[in-house]
Image (cartoon, rainbow, N blue to C red; front, side, top):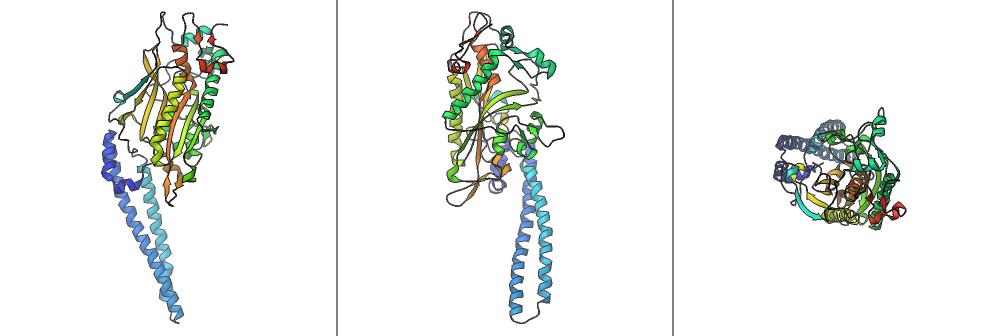
Amino acid sequence: MIDIKLIRDNEELVRENIKKKFQNDKLKILDKIIEKDKEWRKFKSEVDSLRGERNKVSKEVAIAKKAGKSVTVLMKKASEIPGKIDKLEGKMNHVREEIDVFLLQIPNIISDKTPVGKDESQNVEIKKWGKIPKFNFPVKNHVEIVENLGIADFEASAKVSGNGFYYLKGDLALLNSALIRFAIDFMNKKGYTYIEPPLMLNEKSIFASMDRKAIEESVYSIKDESLNLIGTAEQPLLAMHTNQIFTEAELPKKYFSYTMCFRKEIGSHGINEKGLWRTHQFNKVEQFVFCKAEDSEKIYDELLNNSEGVLQTLNLPYRVLEICSGDMADWKFRSADLEVYRPTTNSYGEVMSLSNCTDYQARKLSIRYDTRQGERKIVNTLNNTTLATSRIMVAILENNQQKDGSVNVPDVLVPYMNGKKVIGKK
């Protein structure tokens, strides 16, 4: 949620930001906020005036009593003031609730480094790393590879669960586990604190991470329960410090989590093919940081370096895209995608997503800190994928495939695979 003070102090900045996001329809919402805020401030002024009058009358009553004078008129006047205040505060709170609903629809201010563009076609490639593999044989996609090796079963999972699920078997299941343990060790060595969070959240907690439409399109709700399955560890990590006030010395709080994640994947992409690239259930290790505003861009670079380190250690060719204004979600200040090369499509596909959300998310859950100067501020939040095992497995299978149908295990994963260097037919 954007800060109402920003609109009061710099309306033009907010207006221009909406235009940069190509969301001109929200200019009317901004106008409503400005109108409602004037109404709220009018009520607040009246309430403050009545409180002042109440204090004045109380003093007059005390003086009159001391002087032995009648206080009947003054007491009647004093008794009427609380009712007036309650009535005005009720109106004021109702208007504030209306304002908050509108504020949720206004996008976060974007970074000066964010390119202005309407859609993903205008995202900007800022880095490329790694050597594109060359093959002297017809390359197979990951589904062909794993089915030929007998290490996954998509037909059985479709029967029991539907499309978007899978059975991992033997060495592929071990590779999945190896990636999780590698990522946990990688982040632990970076000094981040490991958290295993709940996989279900109540409505308030899960809706804090992104807008309601995005949540409703992606998250599974539990029937007859006020709980929802998480779509990413970002959601419970953000919610963990709801209503908490840190000291400045406690920041930054650097976390990472391994969780299973569950997503409906409603939208144009859908679940329209078997395999591991887009699924309803997947394993992911996520990074999440709470920090001061002045540190957020430095930590953004740190999170990016962490994920690049993972891909480089796995020796997977990738590129980094700076996400443009029109393709970036409303709660983000700045965002980048890391995409891994897939030889079967001769293109790059997203495997990691980095976001600086500034104070937009934390304001919803009132997560704050006290500065050394005694000022209370909203923290900034950032998140980034360390790795999602399913898509990284696709990249390993397709980039490391051999002519005989086997797959070379990345060197760093060999110890986690009990010394196995090649995944082949039994």
